[in-house]
Length: 134
Length: 210
Image 1 (tube, rainbow over the protein chains, first blue to last red):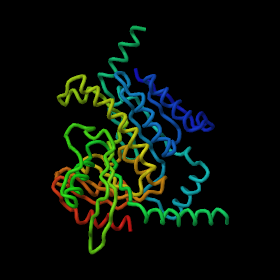
Image 2: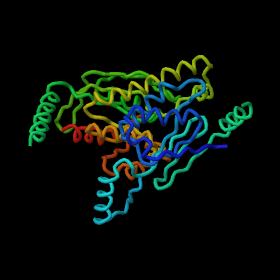
Image 3: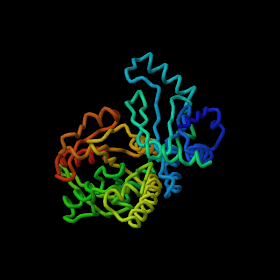
């Protein structure tokens, strides 16, 4: 069984960068796939990678990460203006971020308008075994 | 108004210091994109020596490598920089991948540990770069989050970027795909291994720094 944990932007909105990253990484380390409303700031994404690397070991192999922007590529002047306005109001709340543990998520492909998640059967079996033992 | 004056002074000071010291030119990208192969090509072209070792196994470069005072020339102009080759940035490192590539377990675990440290160092060094060449494997999907995160972080820091779509000697390579993924940047297709299109690369570098 795969657990998809939805994280509304309101849950991280008031957190500082370090706590935001920690909250997301803690969920991923529980073998959950995080579906977060909105995006991290670019510097926070880099922090997430750096902190993930600090935690990599025999059991935790890292993360797979993807963000999906909701902006249209084929925008005209009015769409551009509307998107600009939405950006100003919503900021990082726009789009979605998917983060999964590398042991379960082999690869995330962006098309760029859709996200495809390729799972690792070996990793999934290991988690099933662990849950049965509990 | 005060903010405008402050920004102006900061820009002037930055330009003065940029002129005084040598530019720090960083090579960034995911593992196995060909950063060290490009660093070697640049060093071979202008210094007649190599900079680092390359391998088909990912994370061969696990420490920051610096070659100081590399001077290149193009159309009568000269440019001197300190070339910084960085470890590939990745979101996952699995020692079992290195075992699959033929390494013994203890070697694989050691390499994985060094590789994680290398990624952290590469991210820390982002703030110290004046200009960055992002080296992408032209045969791979350019929309990977690592590529987007690297380029986004450079943009957030206001660091000039030139994207290189490497390995154009391979059939699967597509410079167009890389251009479509990052339309706001100049993308130059090269083969660092065979030295293909290096003149265009050097011209692009001059245009970026000048």
